[in-house]
Length: 405
Image (cartoon, rainbow, N blue to C red; front, side, top):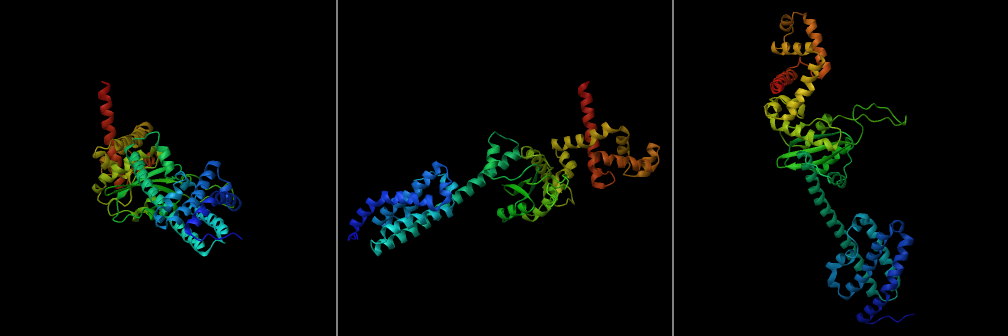
């Protein structure tokens, strides 16, 4: 049986002679007991081995001077590249510490209670130190993600994209696929971002969140096919869940916004086109107060007249290309009937008299108008939208004719 060292200096000298042996035994034990270690690429496995070796060296330094406790974590984890924290979880790090401690304990078990207590105390300190390192890394990553998310949302709102935008979105873990819509409202006094994200996940959606002063902007993306997709199944035992519309999502997300108007931009095919929905939502949010009984939430396209009057070029183009031009191209008869109907205060009889037709003919033509453009002229709000489209479309035709002359 070996003679126990009687002094601390002798113990330290003995430990230093064993450091190489302990490191070799530890690496062998890691391969035998931790499957995730053996599955790692050689570069990362080498980095983990460096951490284990640094832990043994740091223990010897700590045993020499226990006052060095605050620097333990920095000494050990400083031996590995920074990306190791992203590839090795805290649970795996604690497993690594356990293996190192077990190897050292087995080797020093006959060297006195003082050394045994020291390794137990050190293992406790290094475990707390590891937890602190991971907590700080998570906090830093959270702050970085928040800044990156704000940058992405700003790029979407401004429409100024660069080649790095897709990689930034991927770095945020964006799970949205396909259609996107932008929701704009007021920022609540206490914004719970995590709860907002959970609410979106429950609707099979993902969100990018941007806070701009008193304005809260959500970029909402689907993680399932659009509502227009049929509920067919590849597996008869698993029917496809019906997908809710963006307006239904906005209704469920409404409690997470502050008081005031809430405006939903139109649906666009993908995240690259999200700036179009964002511009519509922002323009609608700016003028929503001018509609006395605007619902909450409200579609940005329901505010087309107010947006056009405020000088929004997108609203003017939408009124022309989604209402005026389709009617003009489909039938001048329908366009004329709509003009007369709106000019006569939405009176079927007055319109019929002006056009010398039966009121039922007017009723039929208005139904055809609704089928062609999707808006119903018999409703007060939609009649305002249609009349705005006719006025702006007529102005556009006149300007075009004058330019051609």
